[in-house]
Image (cartoon, rainbow, N blue to C red; front, side, top):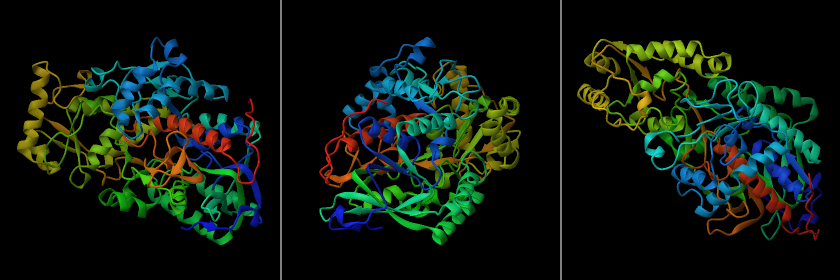
Length: 556
């Protein structure tokens, strides 16, 4: 991909123009647009489909600390405690001062969302879960309660789920979309950004889009809607829909050029649907691509990253992937012991779902088994069956499908289950013995699991659930976490030497951010608010090459 180079912006016959052009209309794009508008800019959003992106299909969880909803639930939190915990998860992916700014503004970001119509509540859920049950909107959405973390910083629930039945992303984005409409931001839908337009000095002055004509937009949107990331075990169907969308676009699109007087903000999501990029960063993982579940919408094809690179932008953390292997719900499954083909335990079973999935991806051929006692197995089956409709649809049913069709093994002894799974018997025996001995002696679990989920395994019988990435019945949601490097003060896309690409900004999952290291539920939306507001504000306040004065901040 190469940019379109022009002598000057004034030399182009533009089809539309704005101070700030946002490419991608998901959560980060909406936040960037609102922020730019609040800072006085004329703002235009373009989106490949109808808007919403992956955000609209997400759980709608934002990770935040020091909020009034936590206080209402009886938890006192503050920026320092939030920072202490996130330093464990985020590591060095952002500068310490950037993490501090995020934490200090976390509660204010939640209130900003509330001011734009997003609803939150203080009903708290305290058990281990990937997503809380109906009627619960505050929960432990990361690894706060694992023993290793709990001794370093007090475990506090920080996952704030948008109020509504089922996944909250639909309500989260609906509120932001209404706020965007009220603010006067314009939206051009069904237009895919194909090239940046740069002037002779290398400044980004606009974007070329491929516009789907009105007569074909309903068909185009239908393909996008059918490729829902909320539907499990639909990876092959989604790939066919993706190819159909590309074929339609290639057949009917018309090029349009849009002027960006102050700059372009890229908020197009990750590269989950770009197999070439995935193979480039993790060939062994990419080999299982069609057995995985793309936790993203069709627009997440790496286009934003490629656009940024075409203008000289640097990339980072491209090998960081969110690979989720859900164990709970059903909660009883956490009582099991996860082993690799060598029979060794390699992960804490009550760790956050992406910590489990990421650990599996590092094992030989990405293979793993969850060994359970009959009591734990059948309790997990009952929990999966009777957990409420929304939890059943997203967690219970996929678990039952894997139990029934994913190659579950049963044997009466350690030798039998080792042979059935093809794992090293001596190592498995030692692993289970160490696990049970720690329980009997009331010592800390050798794998670091919370004692509430430690149950003796005994000598048999056993069940073994396949957790391998090659098992298409074991739902493995994934998405990408790396992207364009940005200036952490402004959100401007930077080159390898750290110099900004003039007129170009990035936010959300197409940029390196808080989510690009240790992923926990809510950190992506939280970063989308933080980085989106940062990029929108910086772009709106940047000087225009056309001589337009800086805008006055608008109250919304």
